[in-house]
Length: 244
Image 1 (cartoon, rainbow, N blue to C red):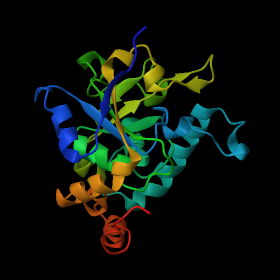
Image 2: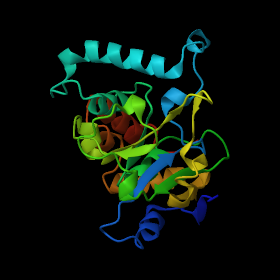
Image 3: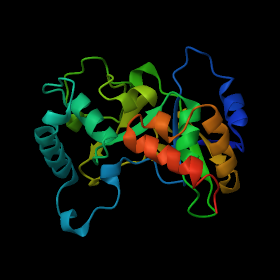
């Protein structure tokens, strides 16, 4: 059985860049930033409201997506048809609980997501690095439904939203295990443990790194290219520039 390799800590954006310098330009390396060391599980696999706990999770996910598709049509500027992969990608980026977990090919974007808010505790933030092989990826035009995959896979969406574009978005698509009635965290999946690396971000470095990244034009307004992202960035610039 493999294990996740610990690379150490980063206390600045420059150190994050140095960690990535050893990878070739042709290598696919995915990054994910987290404010705390939560398991690598999609949102639909996290604790649910007691009102829906008795609902079978894949059934709940399908119901959520059906409702989202029905109501989203007036708000979308792209035609997705019946492509459930792309509909799930769109729903995921809009905050709907799905079996998709967000990743990016931009290490500094991942670092920003780890430090974008002040730390909640003394626990470190994390930047995960994931090096999938070609065989781990969803083949273009895959006919199978994301609800029917037999193995956890890596999926690159088309550019269905501006957020996916600016965040260089990719996803892991997590397989549901019926006999265990659960999804499995990526770091616990023996198929992928040898392909994962983990870097800790000390909570005392969050504010400094956030300032550095802002100077590199990585902030709320650039990561969320809409009025909500702009408002959050303006608030940070003028009111919330330091962690208390």
